[in-house]
Amino acid sequence: MKVAILADIHGNFDALERVSEEVEKVEDVVVLGDIIGYGAEPEECVRWVVKKKAKAVLGNHEAACTGELSLSWFNPRAAKALLWTQEHLSSFAIRFIQSLPLVISDFLQALWVHGSPRQPIEEYIDHPFVAREVFESSPFSLCFFGHTHQAEAYVLEKSGRVERISFREGGKLGILPDSRYLINCGSVGQPRDDNPQASFAIFDTEKKVVEVKRVDYDISSASLKILRSGLPEYLAYRLELGR
Image (tube, rainbow, N blue to C red):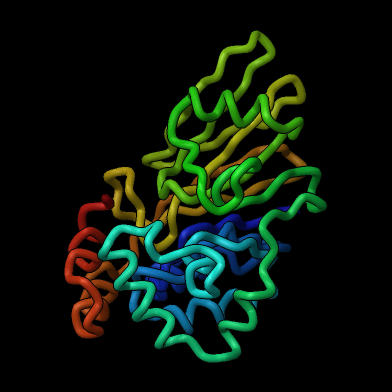
């Protein structure tokens, strides 16, 4: 079985359409939060997730749109983008967002979350020290997460060492029974690891291999839509930089 793992689409439908071409033949799709926010086409992204019948979890941007997370938690650009997003989502999209769970724990013997197992929508796993604390806080063997917009993994080896692995240019990781894993497939719509290519992963459950892939998409189109929408200009420019 092959499962596509997407995270942090952030209203970037140009990037999502390109990734969609790559995942047409997989058996299942999981979306790890932040379908919306920043980008100019949040409604289109939500409807793609619904049409795909993807399993999805709540991200911090969805939580802000439904009032579960205060806008004061966000920086000014993100907060402005969220207010814009709220105005451009249909009641159908809002109802779907409200239905999203914080965590999926009953699929493929893995944990699926936006932020981290201990703080599902808020915590950033962005350092081996944080990863170690997360490993110690919960008994999971394999966890897929998003939120940081960086494609990478943290592996807790049998020796007790935590290894950080970057997938800035993509790559494969075999899942071994004696190790524990925190895996971030990167961001579809707003990568922040200095690589502007859209990022996603394919999990081959039979071979026990996770492959992170990076693909080009029409960044100019996505940027122009942001500029024309009235969203903060910075959100358009950062797509070119992958930051």
